[in-house]
Length: 166
Image (cartoon, rainbow, N blue to C red; front, side, top):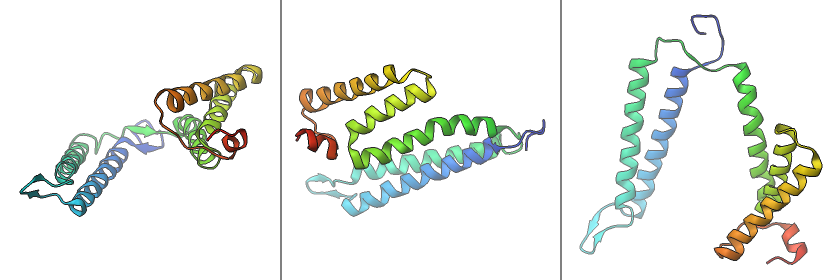
């Protein structure tokens, strides 16, 4: 709770949470690097040499952020996320999670078309007859750019197989 009576997640708690998460990521990078070999051989550095030190930098930065949070934000009582902001963040985050879930089953192009169409309609308040063609157009542009232009195949699902696309 802040000094003005607002309730929510404090900035201090979020600073600590993010610092701990990035530190865990740095530790994971260091651990993975040691499995690949983080030493120096007669041929030069092993495959994990540079990633290991990048992981150490991530851990160091995380420890510094955590110490700054303790010294600067511990007693301020600033609210980072209240009920109004949680609703706003959820309106963006939940469709993004749904996009990831749909894309894993139906492919990135179908997921992209649906995500763009639904976001335009529900968040942007566009009519369906504008949102749906826009989503399909974005997915088509992505297909042309990645599959045709860059020759980088992206995740495809049953719809692309039904159309005979790869």
